[in-house]
Image 1 (cartoon, one colour):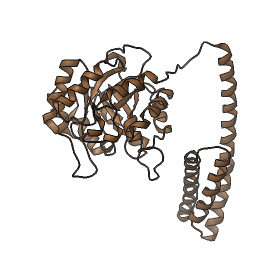
Image 2 (cartoon, rainbow, N blue to C red):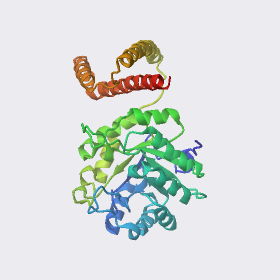
Image 3 (cartoon, rainbow, N blue to C red):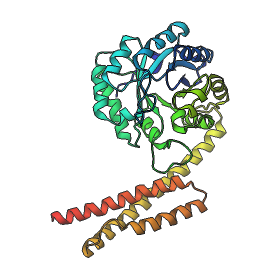
Image 4 (cartoon, rainbow, N blue to C red):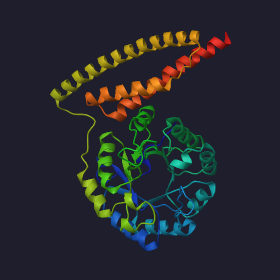
Length: 365
């Protein structure tokens, strides 16, 4: 993908080492609420962009779905009075048209829209020939290719001022957060496209304001480029997502307490120690690969034996029993259950694929 560096179109930070911060209410509720929030955020140096939902895609039809077009002039007023850039979510070509008419600086595509390539393409088509930054949230489901596909559709339409936003994924087993961060997925995106700015949305990941700081720190530890945080002057009275919004005062505290990391150190002893540790990791990774190859060879022998006896590839009872044993063993070793489960789910999925591929090959022959 062709990406225009964010530094070329966004004013430089007051503090060069600080993350980019986008903040504002989940929903624009009134001119007073929007401006009150914006003026409070103007005094926080890290905040460069004001966000507010104008159209809110809701799960249930009777929930508040945003005020729509009447709230767009409020964003223009925010920029006029505070100098903050503005951004809002779009889900249709009509939304795009209205935002451009009212001078919105940056658009973002939400998780529900990212999951639908037809909707993403509609927005991309509406933006052809327009030089505007677009932020794209990960899809609700944990599908990296869908996320990449949405970014590529924008890129193919000539848009190069792109930003990815990690807002977590909807999973069946709810653990600590509202949406599971599955950190490996945004990190894989970062590896594939190192030039692509990557922000974290701790509000939607956590669903609870008490957990926002924890996720902010994790995102910065992972070298993400910034944060988009829902901020409201009176969160408990917010018309949408009240539980996850924080006050501007709390945002200031959170940002002041974030521990910033550097990518390199001039300490020679530290460099030597890190080199030793990385060498150990490399050796262990190679051992893991050899073990996985040995395991794959055995799976292929199992596939042959099952095929000869006409036994199905998937035997759920055995998998459930083995998973329980692996989780207990991992717990004994002090490993996180979600980590072990994700690994063995992937291994089992590959094993079943190998066996079914073997069966299909036998049928053809």
